[in-house]
Amino acid sequence: MSADMQNIQWFPGHMTKTRRKIQEILPIIDAVAEIVDARIPISSRNPDLLDIIKDKPLMILLNKCDMADPKETAKWIDYYKSLGVSAVPIDCKTGKGIGNFKEMVKTTLADKLEVFKSKGMVGKPLRVMVVGIPNVGKSTFINSIAGKGRVKAENRPGVTRGNQWVTIDKQLELLDTPGVLWPKFEDQTVGERLAFTGAVKDAVLDIELLAVRLIENLKENYPELLIQRYKIEDLEADPYDILCEIGKKRGMMIRGGETDTERAANMLLEEYRNCKIGRISLERVENNA
Image (tube, rainbow, N blue to C red; front, side):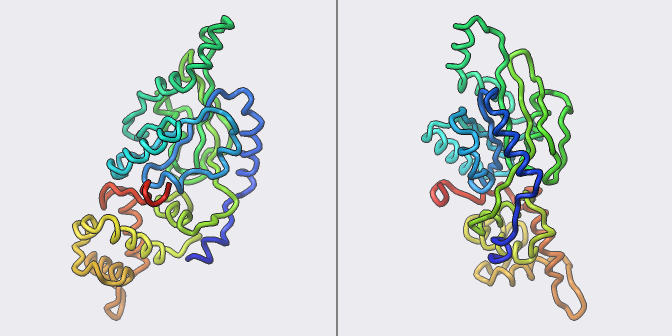
């Protein structure tokens, strides 16, 4: 996968346009809320973002926290705090942690609110831009905050195509932006982890090799979950052989008694994405920060 992964370009025209629009609208933005996937807090961040937003205050929302390892998520929050960046775990689908966002904005923009007050602008709404890569949950987050289905949200990359303002209340306005990836993955691991979580389309990847790489990660970090879910008998076996064993145990066979590894790979990735294997974080502070 490495050569293919590194050569794939993830920067279609609408993403180039989105970056330009973000830069154009920044002057009227008070802060930026970046939504990342709690399972891959590094790979799900756009490395160009800090350069794009310059000196705007940044808040990080670790979405899908109910699918991530809670111990690892706590470490990531402490890590961001050490950098002077506010971070909170949330789950947009259940609403977990969403209620903390408004207070987080007020705390982050306390100085801005004082300026408003000194200028007699009490009541002026704070404007927060919500950014993140495709399929990370931006629209679902805004809908949850607003309490209405104002922003189109689907579980597939690239649904939001234009900037959308959403008034939350008299004190807060959010700007939803299309998901933006970057021109090229310099590190194949980043591309793999984005693929594991469904941030990039499976159609452009070798699904069996992707499943093998996921098994390698699970073997190293969550062997007990791999054994529990798939009743693996020999964790020391080659990851591809483990994939074959998983498929065989699920009855995914083809003529000649061989395992339908493509079907098994799709099943494995689907079960990971639906949290059926367990709460799994693919990136850890000590290895990635």
